[in-house]
Amino acid sequence: MNIESKQKSEHWADETAAKILREKGVKDQYTCASGITPSGTVHIGNFREIISVDLVARALRDAGKTVRFIYSWDDYDVFRKVPQNMPKQAELEQYLRFPITLVPDPWERDESYARHHERDVETMLPAVGIHPEYIYQSQQYRASKYAAGIRTALEAREKLKTILDRFRDEEHKIQGEWWPISVFCGQCRRDTTEVDCWDGEWGVSYHCSRCGFRETADLREAQGIKLGWRVDWPLRWAYEQVDFEPAGKDHHSSGGSFDTARHVCKEVYNRDAPVTFRYDFIGIKGSVGKISSSSGIVIDLKDLLKVYTPELARYLFAGTRPNTEFTISFDLDVIKIYEDYDRLERTAFKKEPVKDGQAFEKARRIYELSQVAEVPEAMPYQVPFRHLCNLLQIAGGDIGKTLDGLQGLASCQRARVEARCRCAAYWVEHCAPPEFRFALRPPGERAALSEEEAAAVRGLRDKVIAHIGSYPDDKSCAEAIYRAAEDHGLEGKELFRAAYQALINKDQGPRLANFLRSIPKERLMGILEAY
Image (cartoon, rainbow, N blue to C red; front, side, top):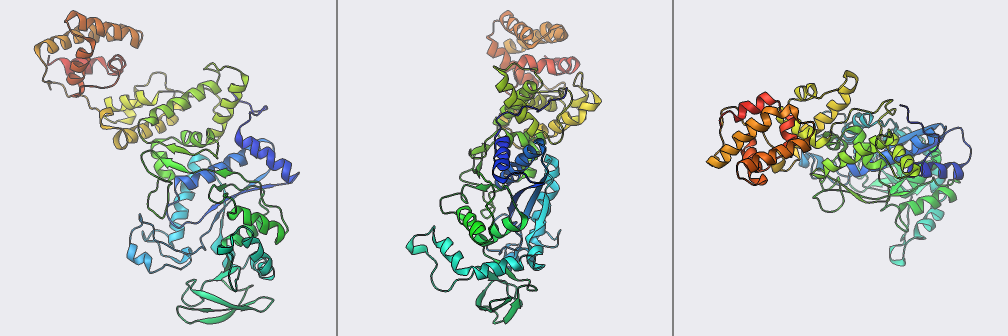
């Protein structure tokens, strides 16, 4: 089945794409941008911006447009603080005030600290179907790509000062001499410098307050001169002709960096600012406050993909409006999220009823945008996440054995289900609460049961499990279990406890009827033979 998209629903990505087309007009190519400073682990909050841009870029492409998706690494920013989750803290502290691209990699894997974090992201994004064009600002600046733009900023120094002060109260307005640039010292490489003068053309004179070095640098050749953030951002919008870029709610606050950048872009670089929207912060279940690289409280895309398949990871964001704060869960809520996605998938393939056509279109569009690549032609094989977790534990964590036991699983569907198995196995071992985990007793091991309980377990074995294949569904099996309890004068919950103790050495466990029907009959009989 092909899921066609001729009539798009009111998904926020499509709404944004339509706004871009309205405001930017007809163009041969539309540029969508994102970026981050690789000052530490690029966490899942940063990923929200990346995937938000990817979803809008997809919406534009679905509308038949050519799209350039650029991702800027701000690796020429200053290394201001050593994040708590970094190794070799003392060594890294020696490089404070250096450009991040010149800080060594404490893991000794890559050529720099910045490159290590960049590579971690670049190797993971293809797994979720994101393939931007990367721009490294250290290369751009050191190649003097922005020389003309820096000179423009110097020429408009007073205008820039006025724009920046426009959003500040009297106490915070710029005082004294101000320059829109900063300089990394040509000798010690730190930004501990002060600009002395500009010759009105290409020469900038500065001195370093740390090492005493002085020079007059030519903007067309100098490698250490860069613009301050609130001027750098609009310069790049103009340089790359950016049509869309979102920003976090901190940047979108009144008088924040987006407000000033919008005016700088128009009044200094003579270009309208890109279309934008505000995205909100992301929390992690059980943590307090927003995720922060500098604090060391980080969950990255690699962590997310240990628990959620790539489609589920995309669904978390495609199914939530960007300006909505939400929490990513690694606890029991994971089961519900998988159930919600499976329901969405059934709806998209018209296997689940919906109230009207609009609800179907909405579900279908979220499902489309959740896919890593093309939408599957046929309804994928589904196995509920909770059930899969139980099957894996029954199989002692053996994924191959679990897959082999799934009835009707075609070879072409195996890879997709195997990916879910890996996530389920990781979640059970590392994230699930202790009460969710279990292991079947080996044959011959006996639980400490009363004689009444042991007799009821024998009855369960001989009257229910011996005929387990005859029950067409969990309901009929559950009814037989309750009859076995009545036959031995026990309440149903008393037999349940005894059965769980006999099978997994716990007072509680998975829904018993489904559990018994999921375990090979011979294995069950072998475990309960001791009674």
